[in-house]
Length: 469
Ligand SMILES: *Cc1c(COP(=O)(O)O)cnc(C)c1O
Image 1 (cartoon, rainbow, N blue to C red):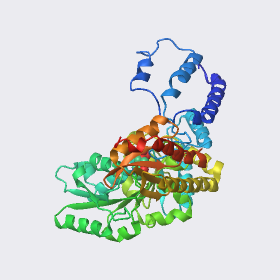
Image 2: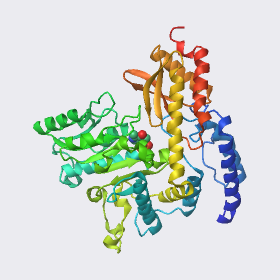
Image 3: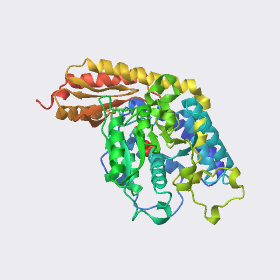
Image 4: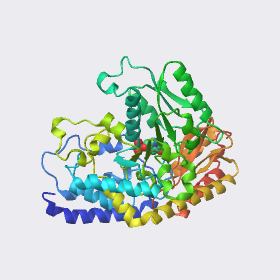
């Protein structure tokens, strides 16, 4: 690997390896089967002083790495949420790696900035968001939500927090549903607002934030002399897919800025028939969704749309002398919209993916995932000893053992020890439940139905009755 001339042969070898890896995934257990420390122990204790031969490096890669991977692109990965990746995205990422541009300013790579602007326009249209919204790409939804919460903080403080700090500032309050993702907790902690000032609003039977409770909480805080700073909604909660009734809640927000966390479910809004689920989204100041979860543009690709980026730029943007450019206001310098200064060229994979599959290709995949999740749910509903713990929301539902948590825990462990599928658990309504989240790029209906086969086998073998055994 002395010069770039060595790259074509090695890239071809890597591409062939990638093709074979994907072709063989169904024969591998989804989850890594090593003990903690195994891989670390297999590494030499220090970096080599002398250059090593690429053949030796590649051989060690093949020997050590694949067996220590949990295969996120496995067609039977149903854990967490998907982080799906299409071949077109992989190709774009290879080019991005080869270019290795750092797109912090327009000037430091106009293509990175302008393609990002273009993709935000394409995506906005694809999701049915209003023309006025502009967007940017972050590494993760966590960073986008932190950016939105920092902006809420500074709006509430008249932008004085940036210079004066928070000591002596009034108590700020942020409101979110009880189904909100932990990234919102992290954002209020890191923003100096504090966990105790994130008010989790109770949810109704349909798992949506109670609008009356939201209005009452804001009013009570104002009466107590606190300063309400913003509301975070969720569309597609991580546990069991809760959706807030945004349209109903907005009039109860008392004019506060709003941010919508649609990290997972947002991609599904390319399908018009699902948009009722986030009705009112267009009225939020800020929305985050992760094309890296369910649109085939691999990690990292978290898109934040804003009705007006001015406050966020005033919060996060900083122009020391060495970053000043002569283009002035004619160009966008995206580092001023985000937390890190450096920026990867993330728009290229969106461009490749949206063109290689078209919106129709992406829609049909998402529709299949939703249909198959529903079909699997119906099949599990009929299995003796199981109960459906949360009904399908898009491609996510959960089930549990009727016997109770011990049996459910034994079942999820047995499922993952079997290795053909990978599921994870959470708590819902006071009990342990097993989540099924469909969304892998290459999964088929048979892959999804494999969950039922595995579960039925294990139940027959007594896995769901361990607690009584
Ligand atoms: C996945 C997820 C997040 C966090 O996403 P990252 O991009 O990994 O930070 C936040 N909120 C919801 C609802 C999610 O599903």
